[in-house]
Length: 204
Image 1 (cartoon, rainbow, N blue to C red):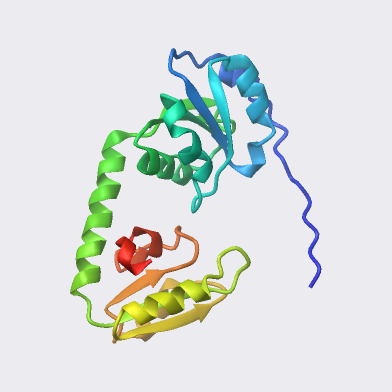
Image 2: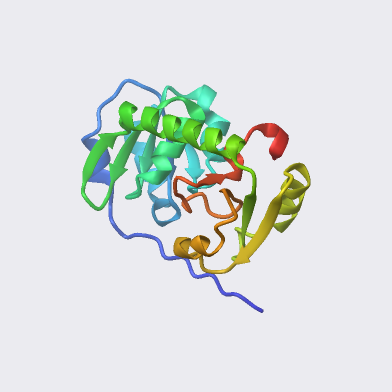
């Protein structure tokens, strides 16, 4: 099936917002795809900054690539999920320039710690489970069937569940599954689901 991708960038000018932001730190500039063209504007205004590029909630490699070259990050976008992931993966302070609210904020340290505790709790439940369900999405960019097969070989009593549209309520139809491992979008989340990337390396 042929696909046609049409860029739909935001037309909001973030220049006035960036001009309000004052810091002596060297910043790594990141954004979601909607605001990607705005990074050059921000870089010209801030001067002491480096463009990292686009990030996704499940992929912050562009932040990791430049983390040793910057003091902190400035994320341009409206989502909060992305900057938290940047903070977790880089251990750097992350500022958020939200073009929609026209406000600049900072990722809360308490929220980061709460997120770390949540992941630790999930690992405990993962290790205490007897039967595992491995979630695989058929959506482009999220399809990780090979990773699911590799994981199944390492986990006894594990079963692969393939879906297109995820509905957490449907998991209740499988009461024999104690815990779920998600190989799709990391925003699929609940207390009984852990993302594959959050498992110890020996399971990846």
